[in-house]
Length: 249
Length: 224
Image (cartoon, rainbow over all chains, first blue to last red; front, side, top):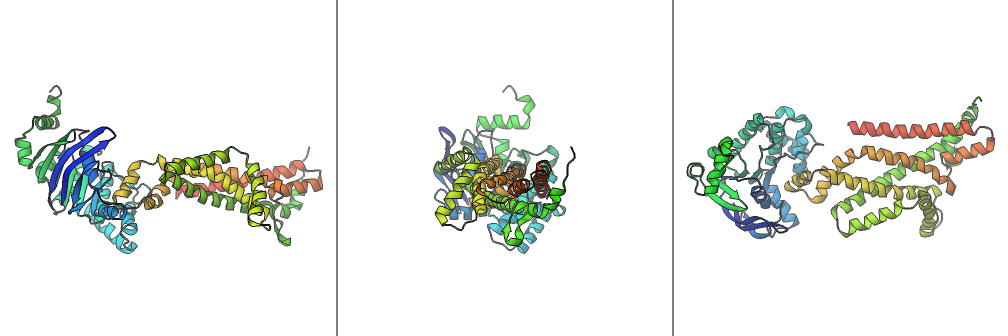
Protein backbone atom coordinates (compact mmCIF):
# COMPACT_ATOMS: atom_id res chain seq x y z
CA UNK A 1 0.00 0.00 0.00
CA UNK A 2 2.78 2.41 0.96
CA UNK A 3 6.38 1.71 0.14
CA UNK A 4 9.25 3.99 1.11
CA UNK A 5 12.30 3.44 -1.08
CA UNK A 6 15.55 5.00 0.07
CA UNK A 7 13.71 8.20 1.05
CA UNK A 8 15.78 11.29 1.77
CA UNK A 9 14.82 14.80 2.76
CA UNK A 10 17.09 17.81 3.00
CA UNK A 11 16.25 21.29 4.26
CA UNK A 12 19.10 23.11 2.56
CA UNK A 13 22.12 21.35 4.09
CA UNK A 14 20.17 19.76 6.92
CA UNK A 15 19.67 16.07 6.23
CA UNK A 16 16.52 15.18 8.19
CA UNK A 17 15.46 11.92 6.54
CA UNK A 18 18.43 9.74 5.72
CA UNK A 19 17.54 6.77 3.64
CA UNK A 20 14.30 5.22 4.85
CA UNK A 21 12.97 1.96 3.49
CA UNK A 22 9.64 0.75 4.79
CA UNK A 23 6.77 -1.31 3.46
CA UNK A 24 3.23 -1.03 4.73
CA UNK A 25 0.60 -3.42 3.49
CA UNK A 26 -3.09 -2.70 3.10
CA UNK A 27 -4.99 -2.50 6.36
CA UNK A 28 -1.90 -2.27 8.52
CA UNK A 29 -1.67 0.14 11.42
CA UNK A 30 1.85 1.44 11.79
CA UNK A 31 2.97 3.60 14.67
CA UNK A 32 6.01 5.79 14.17
CA UNK A 33 7.73 7.06 17.25
CA UNK A 34 11.00 8.71 18.13
CA UNK A 35 12.46 11.72 19.89
CA UNK A 36 11.46 15.21 18.71
CA UNK A 37 13.41 16.33 15.70
CA UNK A 38 13.91 12.74 14.59
CA UNK A 39 12.07 13.32 11.32
CA UNK A 40 8.93 11.32 12.04
CA UNK A 41 6.52 14.13 11.11
CA UNK A 42 8.51 14.92 8.00
CA UNK A 43 8.30 11.27 7.02
CA UNK A 44 4.51 11.15 6.92
CA UNK A 45 4.27 14.61 5.36
CA UNK A 46 6.30 13.21 2.49
CA UNK A 47 3.60 10.64 1.75
CA UNK A 48 1.06 13.23 0.59
CA UNK A 49 3.80 15.59 -0.56
CA UNK A 50 3.22 18.33 1.98
CA UNK A 51 7.00 18.09 1.87
CA UNK A 52 8.77 17.48 -1.41
CA UNK A 53 11.03 14.44 -1.61
CA UNK A 54 14.71 15.21 -2.01
CA UNK A 55 15.72 11.72 -3.12
CA UNK A 56 14.23 8.24 -3.39
CA UNK A 57 10.56 7.56 -3.90
CA UNK A 58 7.36 6.62 -2.11
CA UNK A 59 4.92 4.28 -3.82
CA UNK A 60 1.29 4.61 -2.85
CA UNK A 61 -0.77 1.80 -4.34
CA UNK A 62 2.11 1.20 -6.73
CA UNK A 63 2.07 4.83 -7.87
CA UNK A 64 5.24 6.86 -7.48
CA UNK A 65 4.45 10.10 -5.62
CA UNK A 66 7.71 11.76 -6.68
CA UNK A 67 6.55 11.92 -10.28
CA UNK A 68 3.08 13.29 -9.56
CA UNK A 69 2.22 16.85 -10.52
CA UNK A 70 -0.76 19.16 -10.10
CA UNK A 71 -3.90 17.24 -11.03
CA UNK A 72 -2.73 13.71 -10.32
CA UNK A 73 -1.12 14.87 -7.09
CA UNK A 74 -4.39 16.44 -5.94
CA UNK A 75 -6.16 13.25 -6.93
CA UNK A 76 -3.78 11.28 -4.70
CA UNK A 77 -4.23 13.71 -1.83
CA UNK A 78 -7.99 13.13 -1.84
CA UNK A 79 -7.24 9.47 -1.17
CA UNK A 80 -4.88 10.15 1.72
CA UNK A 81 -6.40 11.63 4.86
CA UNK A 82 -4.14 13.76 7.02
CA UNK A 83 -4.87 14.61 10.66
CA UNK A 84 -2.78 17.43 12.07
CA UNK A 85 -1.40 17.95 15.55
CA UNK A 86 -3.10 21.37 15.76
CA UNK A 87 -6.36 20.10 14.14
CA UNK A 88 -6.26 22.92 11.54
CA UNK A 89 -10.00 23.30 11.30
CA UNK A 90 -11.17 26.27 9.25
CA UNK A 91 -12.15 28.79 11.95
CA UNK A 92 -14.61 30.69 9.75
CA UNK A 93 -16.71 27.60 9.06
CA UNK A 94 -18.96 25.49 11.28
CA UNK A 95 -18.10 21.89 12.08
CA UNK A 96 -20.44 20.74 9.35
CA UNK A 97 -19.07 23.21 6.79
CA UNK A 98 -15.53 22.15 7.67
CA UNK A 99 -16.49 18.67 6.56
CA UNK A 100 -18.57 19.57 3.50
CA UNK A 101 -16.21 22.14 1.94
CA UNK A 102 -13.81 19.70 0.29
CA UNK A 103 -16.63 17.30 -0.52
CA UNK A 104 -18.35 20.01 -2.54
CA UNK A 105 -15.37 21.82 -4.02
CA UNK A 106 -12.94 18.97 -4.58
CA UNK A 107 -15.14 15.89 -5.02
CA UNK A 108 -18.05 17.89 -6.54
CA UNK A 109 -20.61 16.18 -4.33
CA UNK A 110 -24.00 17.92 -4.17
CA UNK A 111 -24.58 20.08 -1.07
CA UNK A 112 -27.36 17.75 0.05
CA UNK A 113 -25.25 14.59 -0.14
CA UNK A 114 -22.29 16.39 1.41
CA UNK A 115 -24.42 17.43 4.36
CA UNK A 116 -25.73 13.90 4.77
CA UNK A 117 -22.19 12.59 4.87
CA UNK A 118 -21.14 15.27 7.36
CA UNK A 119 -24.02 14.46 9.69
CA UNK A 120 -23.25 10.76 9.52
CA UNK A 121 -19.57 11.31 10.33
CA UNK A 122 -20.18 13.78 13.12
CA UNK A 123 -22.42 11.14 14.62
CA UNK A 124 -19.68 8.56 14.24
CA UNK A 125 -17.21 10.70 16.21
CA UNK A 126 -19.86 11.47 18.82
CA UNK A 127 -20.50 15.10 17.90
CA UNK A 128 -23.92 14.97 16.27
CA UNK A 129 -25.04 17.94 18.38
CA UNK A 130 -22.12 20.15 17.30
CA UNK A 131 -22.99 20.51 13.62
CA UNK A 132 -23.46 24.26 13.78
CA UNK A 133 -20.64 24.97 16.23
CA UNK A 134 -17.61 26.94 15.14
CA UNK A 135 -14.16 25.56 16.02
CA UNK A 136 -13.64 28.25 18.66
CA UNK A 137 -16.71 26.93 20.49
CA UNK A 138 -15.29 23.40 20.70
CA UNK A 139 -12.76 21.89 23.07
CA UNK A 140 -9.47 20.60 21.71
CA UNK A 141 -10.65 17.02 21.77
CA UNK A 142 -13.86 17.92 19.98
CA UNK A 143 -11.95 19.91 17.37
CA UNK A 144 -9.68 16.96 16.70
CA UNK A 145 -12.67 14.67 16.35
CA UNK A 146 -14.24 17.07 13.83
CA UNK A 147 -10.89 17.12 12.01
CA UNK A 148 -10.91 13.32 11.89
CA UNK A 149 -14.50 13.38 10.61
CA UNK A 150 -13.45 15.90 7.96
CA UNK A 151 -10.68 13.58 6.87
CA UNK A 152 -12.91 10.48 6.84
CA UNK A 153 -15.57 12.26 4.77
CA UNK A 154 -13.25 12.08 1.77
CA UNK A 155 -13.32 8.24 2.13
CA UNK A 156 -9.55 7.96 2.00
CA UNK A 157 -7.65 4.72 1.49
CA UNK A 158 -4.89 5.78 3.84
CA UNK A 159 -4.95 7.83 7.04
CA UNK A 160 -1.92 9.74 8.25
CA UNK A 161 -1.90 11.07 11.82
CA UNK A 162 0.70 13.62 12.88
CA UNK A 163 0.80 13.51 16.70
CA UNK A 164 -3.00 13.81 16.90
CA UNK A 165 -3.12 13.93 20.70
CA UNK A 166 0.00 15.97 21.49
CA UNK A 167 -1.80 19.30 21.60
CA UNK A 168 -4.59 18.03 23.85
CA UNK A 169 -5.17 18.27 27.56
CA UNK A 170 -4.73 14.85 29.16
CA UNK A 171 -8.44 14.34 29.84
CA UNK A 172 -9.25 14.82 26.17
CA UNK A 173 -6.75 12.35 24.78
CA UNK A 174 -9.06 9.44 25.54
CA UNK A 175 -11.96 10.61 23.37
CA UNK A 176 -9.66 11.03 20.37
CA UNK A 177 -7.92 7.70 20.94
CA UNK A 178 -11.30 5.99 21.13
CA UNK A 179 -12.18 7.27 17.68
CA UNK A 180 -8.76 6.21 16.41
CA UNK A 181 -9.20 2.75 17.89
CA UNK A 182 -12.45 2.30 16.00
CA UNK A 183 -10.64 3.31 12.84
CA UNK A 184 -7.71 1.00 13.50
CA UNK A 185 -10.02 -1.97 13.77
CA UNK A 186 -12.00 -0.95 10.66
CA UNK A 187 -9.33 -2.20 8.30
CA UNK A 188 -8.11 1.13 6.91
CA UNK A 189 -4.38 1.62 6.44
CA UNK A 190 -3.03 3.95 9.12
CA UNK A 191 0.31 5.60 9.65
CA UNK A 192 0.37 7.23 13.07
CA UNK A 193 3.07 9.42 14.53
CA UNK A 194 2.42 9.38 18.27
CA UNK A 195 3.87 9.08 21.72
CA UNK A 196 0.81 7.20 22.94
CA UNK A 197 2.51 3.91 23.67
CA UNK A 198 -0.76 2.44 24.89
CA UNK A 199 -2.21 2.92 21.42
CA UNK A 200 0.91 1.40 19.86
CA UNK A 201 0.89 -1.62 22.15
CA UNK A 202 -2.77 -2.35 21.72
CA UNK A 203 -3.51 -1.49 18.11
CA UNK A 204 -0.36 -1.28 16.02
CA UNK A 205 0.67 -4.06 13.67
CA UNK A 206 4.10 -2.54 13.48
CA UNK A 207 6.04 -0.04 15.58
CA UNK A 208 8.79 1.92 13.89
CA UNK A 209 11.37 3.82 15.91
CA UNK A 210 13.15 6.67 14.15
CA UNK A 211 16.11 8.68 15.36
CA UNK A 212 18.00 11.30 13.38
CA UNK A 213 16.23 10.40 10.19
CA UNK A 214 17.01 6.69 10.28
CA UNK A 215 14.85 3.70 11.24
CA UNK A 216 16.48 2.06 14.24
CA UNK A 217 13.77 -0.40 15.09
CA UNK A 218 10.91 -1.89 13.12
CA UNK A 219 9.06 -4.57 15.01
CA UNK A 220 5.74 -5.97 16.16
CA UNK A 221 4.57 -4.18 19.31
CA UNK A 222 5.22 -7.23 21.49
CA UNK A 223 8.84 -7.40 20.37
CA UNK A 224 9.23 -3.65 20.36
CA UNK A 225 8.19 -3.21 23.96
CA UNK A 226 9.55 -6.43 25.44
CA UNK A 227 12.83 -6.85 23.65
CA UNK A 228 13.93 -3.75 21.76
CA UNK A 229 17.13 -4.48 19.85
CA UNK A 230 18.72 -1.07 19.64
CA UNK A 231 20.15 0.63 22.78
CA UNK A 232 18.72 3.98 21.62
CA UNK A 233 15.25 2.42 21.52
CA UNK A 234 15.67 1.06 25.02
CA UNK A 235 16.74 4.48 26.28
CA UNK A 236 13.80 6.16 24.50
CA UNK A 237 11.31 3.71 25.98
CA UNK A 238 12.74 4.13 29.47
CA UNK A 239 12.43 7.92 29.17
CA UNK A 240 8.94 7.68 27.80
CA UNK A 241 7.65 5.17 30.32
CA UNK A 242 9.33 6.53 33.45
CA UNK A 243 10.69 10.00 32.71
CA UNK A 244 11.47 10.76 36.37
CA UNK A 245 14.06 8.06 36.71
CA UNK A 246 16.00 8.53 33.53
CA UNK A 247 16.85 12.22 33.59
CA UNK A 248 20.57 11.48 34.10
CA UNK A 249 20.91 8.60 31.68
CA UNK B 1 -22.83 85.35 16.37
CA UNK B 2 -26.00 83.48 15.49
CA UNK B 3 -25.94 80.81 12.85
CA UNK B 4 -28.67 80.79 10.23
CA UNK B 5 -29.09 77.44 8.58
CA UNK B 6 -32.00 78.44 6.35
CA UNK B 7 -29.51 78.78 3.48
CA UNK B 8 -28.77 75.07 3.80
CA UNK B 9 -32.45 74.18 3.94
CA UNK B 10 -33.25 76.30 0.93
CA UNK B 11 -30.47 74.70 -1.11
CA UNK B 12 -30.88 71.25 0.35
CA UNK B 13 -32.04 69.54 -2.85
CA UNK B 14 -29.10 71.04 -4.74
CA UNK B 15 -26.65 69.89 -2.05
CA UNK B 16 -28.16 66.41 -1.94
CA UNK B 17 -28.45 65.60 -5.64
CA UNK B 18 -27.40 68.63 -7.69
CA UNK B 19 -29.24 69.23 -10.96
CA UNK B 20 -30.68 65.76 -11.10
CA UNK B 21 -33.92 67.06 -12.61
CA UNK B 22 -31.96 68.40 -15.59
CA UNK B 23 -30.16 65.09 -15.90
CA UNK B 24 -26.94 66.21 -14.23
CA UNK B 25 -26.13 64.17 -11.19
CA UNK B 26 -24.42 66.03 -8.37
CA UNK B 27 -24.06 66.78 -4.68
CA UNK B 28 -24.12 64.13 -1.97
CA UNK B 29 -25.61 61.54 -4.32
CA UNK B 30 -22.71 61.88 -6.76
CA UNK B 31 -20.23 61.72 -3.87
CA UNK B 32 -21.81 58.47 -2.69
CA UNK B 33 -21.88 56.98 -6.18
CA UNK B 34 -18.24 57.92 -6.76
CA UNK B 35 -17.13 56.56 -3.39
CA UNK B 36 -19.05 53.30 -3.73
CA UNK B 37 -17.92 52.58 -7.29
CA UNK B 38 -14.31 53.59 -6.59
CA UNK B 39 -14.41 51.48 -3.43
CA UNK B 40 -15.79 48.43 -5.20
CA UNK B 41 -13.33 48.77 -8.06
CA UNK B 42 -10.35 49.24 -5.77
CA UNK B 43 -11.39 46.26 -3.69
CA UNK B 44 -11.65 44.06 -6.76
CA UNK B 45 -8.36 45.28 -8.19
CA UNK B 46 -6.55 45.28 -4.82
CA UNK B 47 -7.60 41.71 -3.99
CA UNK B 48 -6.69 40.47 -7.47
CA UNK B 49 -3.25 42.07 -7.25
CA UNK B 50 -2.75 40.72 -3.72
CA UNK B 51 -3.57 37.22 -4.93
CA UNK B 52 -1.04 37.56 -7.74
CA UNK B 53 1.57 38.91 -5.32
CA UNK B 54 0.81 36.09 -2.88
CA UNK B 55 0.99 33.33 -5.47
CA UNK B 56 3.98 34.62 -7.43
CA UNK B 57 6.43 35.78 -4.80
CA UNK B 58 9.33 36.34 -7.17
CA UNK B 59 9.26 38.95 -9.92
CA UNK B 60 5.51 39.70 -10.09
CA UNK B 61 5.40 40.60 -6.41
CA UNK B 62 8.41 42.91 -6.74
CA UNK B 63 6.85 44.64 -9.75
CA UNK B 64 3.57 45.10 -7.90
CA UNK B 65 5.38 46.52 -4.88
CA UNK B 66 7.20 48.95 -7.15
CA UNK B 67 3.92 49.95 -8.76
CA UNK B 68 2.33 50.50 -5.34
CA UNK B 69 5.35 52.51 -4.24
CA UNK B 70 4.99 54.76 -7.29
CA UNK B 71 1.32 55.38 -6.63
CA UNK B 72 1.81 56.05 -2.97
CA UNK B 73 4.67 58.42 -3.72
CA UNK B 74 2.58 60.93 -5.63
CA UNK B 75 -0.28 63.07 -4.33
CA UNK B 76 -3.74 61.78 -5.21
CA UNK B 77 -4.58 65.08 -6.85
CA UNK B 78 -1.87 64.38 -9.47
CA UNK B 79 -3.34 60.98 -10.22
CA UNK B 80 -6.73 62.63 -10.69
CA UNK B 81 -5.20 65.16 -13.05
CA UNK B 82 -3.37 62.51 -15.06
CA UNK B 83 -6.43 60.38 -15.52
CA UNK B 84 -8.49 63.45 -16.35
CA UNK B 85 -6.22 63.98 -19.36
CA UNK B 86 -5.28 60.34 -19.96
CA UNK B 87 -8.70 58.68 -20.05
CA UNK B 88 -10.11 60.92 -22.82
CA UNK B 89 -6.80 60.56 -24.72
CA UNK B 90 -7.05 56.76 -24.55
CA UNK B 91 -10.77 56.26 -25.08
CA UNK B 92 -11.64 59.43 -26.93
CA UNK B 93 -13.85 62.19 -25.58
CA UNK B 94 -17.22 61.69 -24.03
CA UNK B 95 -15.97 60.14 -20.80
CA UNK B 96 -17.60 61.93 -17.87
CA UNK B 97 -15.12 63.65 -15.59
CA UNK B 98 -16.64 61.85 -12.63
CA UNK B 99 -15.65 58.55 -14.22
CA UNK B 100 -12.02 59.55 -14.60
CA UNK B 101 -12.01 60.59 -10.93
CA UNK B 102 -13.54 57.22 -9.95
CA UNK B 103 -10.79 55.44 -11.86
CA UNK B 104 -8.13 57.62 -10.25
CA UNK B 105 -9.49 56.94 -6.76
CA UNK B 106 -9.78 53.22 -7.44
CA UNK B 107 -6.31 53.02 -8.83
CA UNK B 108 -4.86 54.99 -5.93
CA UNK B 109 -6.65 52.95 -3.25
CA UNK B 110 -6.01 49.59 -4.87
CA UNK B 111 -2.32 49.89 -4.00
CA UNK B 112 -3.12 50.21 -0.30
CA UNK B 113 -5.69 47.41 -0.48
CA UNK B 114 -3.22 45.13 -2.20
CA UNK B 115 -0.72 45.63 0.62
CA UNK B 116 -3.38 45.10 3.30
CA UNK B 117 -4.76 41.94 1.73
CA UNK B 118 -1.32 40.47 1.13
CA UNK B 119 -0.38 41.16 4.75
CA UNK B 120 -3.69 39.62 5.84
CA UNK B 121 -3.02 36.47 3.83
CA UNK B 122 0.51 36.19 5.15
CA UNK B 123 -0.68 36.63 8.71
CA UNK B 124 -2.77 33.45 8.56
CA UNK B 125 -1.03 30.35 9.90
CA UNK B 126 0.37 28.28 7.05
CA UNK B 127 -1.37 25.27 8.63
CA UNK B 128 -4.61 26.59 7.09
CA UNK B 129 -3.03 26.41 3.67
CA UNK B 130 -1.68 22.93 4.41
CA UNK B 131 -5.05 21.67 5.61
CA UNK B 132 -6.59 22.73 2.31
CA UNK B 133 -3.79 21.35 0.16
CA UNK B 134 -3.91 18.03 2.04
CA UNK B 135 -7.62 17.74 1.18
CA UNK B 136 -6.86 18.04 -2.52
CA UNK B 137 -7.80 21.70 -3.08
CA UNK B 138 -5.97 23.67 -5.75
CA UNK B 139 -4.05 26.71 -4.56
CA UNK B 140 -6.71 29.03 -5.88
CA UNK B 141 -9.46 27.03 -4.18
CA UNK B 142 -7.51 27.31 -0.93
CA UNK B 143 -7.37 31.06 -1.43
CA UNK B 144 -10.99 31.40 -2.45
CA UNK B 145 -12.59 29.21 0.21
CA UNK B 146 -10.15 29.12 3.10
CA UNK B 147 -7.65 31.98 3.18
CA UNK B 148 -9.43 35.00 1.67
CA UNK B 149 -12.62 34.68 3.76
CA UNK B 150 -10.52 34.71 6.92
CA UNK B 151 -8.11 37.42 5.78
CA UNK B 152 -10.82 39.76 4.49
CA UNK B 153 -12.78 39.47 7.69
CA UNK B 154 -9.69 40.33 9.74
CA UNK B 155 -9.05 43.29 7.46
CA UNK B 156 -12.44 44.96 7.83
CA UNK B 157 -11.16 47.62 10.28
CA UNK B 158 -8.33 48.45 7.89
CA UNK B 159 -10.79 48.69 4.98
CA UNK B 160 -13.02 51.04 6.96
CA UNK B 161 -10.07 53.40 7.37
CA UNK B 162 -9.21 53.19 3.68
CA UNK B 163 -12.77 53.71 2.52
CA UNK B 164 -13.33 56.61 4.93
CA UNK B 165 -10.32 58.29 3.33
CA UNK B 166 -11.72 57.44 -0.07
CA UNK B 167 -15.08 59.05 0.75
CA UNK B 168 -13.37 62.23 1.83
CA UNK B 169 -10.97 62.17 -1.10
CA UNK B 170 -13.87 62.36 -3.55
CA UNK B 171 -13.91 66.06 -2.65
CA UNK B 172 -10.72 66.44 -4.70
CA UNK B 173 -12.87 65.93 -7.78
CA UNK B 174 -13.67 69.64 -7.63
CA UNK B 175 -10.37 70.37 -9.44
CA UNK B 176 -11.73 68.73 -12.58
CA UNK B 177 -15.14 70.34 -12.27
CA UNK B 178 -17.13 67.40 -10.97
CA UNK B 179 -20.20 68.74 -9.13
CA UNK B 180 -19.83 66.52 -6.07
CA UNK B 181 -20.76 67.59 -2.54
CA UNK B 182 -17.86 69.97 -1.84
CA UNK B 183 -18.14 71.55 -5.27
CA UNK B 184 -21.87 72.26 -5.04
CA UNK B 185 -21.35 73.59 -1.51
CA UNK B 186 -18.75 76.04 -2.81
CA UNK B 187 -21.19 77.07 -5.53
CA UNK B 188 -23.93 77.73 -3.00
CA UNK B 189 -21.45 79.64 -0.90
CA UNK B 190 -20.32 81.79 -3.83
CA UNK B 191 -23.90 82.51 -4.74
CA UNK B 192 -25.04 83.48 -1.25
CA UNK B 193 -21.75 84.89 0.08
CA UNK B 194 -22.97 85.35 3.69
CA UNK B 195 -23.14 81.85 5.18
CA UNK B 196 -19.84 79.95 4.71
CA UNK B 197 -19.84 78.63 8.29
CA UNK B 198 -23.34 77.23 8.09
CA UNK B 199 -22.78 75.68 4.67
CA UNK B 200 -19.45 74.04 5.38
CA UNK B 201 -20.44 72.87 8.85
CA UNK B 202 -23.43 71.12 7.28
CA UNK B 203 -21.22 69.60 4.58
CA UNK B 204 -18.78 68.38 7.21
CA UNK B 205 -21.70 66.79 9.04
CA UNK B 206 -22.77 65.02 5.85
CA UNK B 207 -19.26 63.58 5.34
CA UNK B 208 -19.26 62.52 8.98
CA UNK B 209 -22.59 60.75 8.57
CA UNK B 210 -21.34 58.95 5.45
CA UNK B 211 -18.27 57.68 7.26
CA UNK B 212 -20.37 56.64 10.26
CA UNK B 213 -22.71 54.67 8.03
CA UNK B 214 -19.64 52.94 6.60
CA UNK B 215 -18.51 51.99 10.10
CA UNK B 216 -21.96 50.67 10.95
CA UNK B 217 -22.10 48.52 7.82
CA UNK B 218 -18.61 47.22 8.57
CA UNK B 219 -19.59 46.34 12.11
CA UNK B 220 -22.67 44.44 11.01
CA UNK B 221 -20.59 42.46 8.49
CA UNK B 222 -17.98 41.77 11.17
CA UNK B 223 -20.55 40.42 13.55
CA UNK B 224 -22.11 38.10 11.05
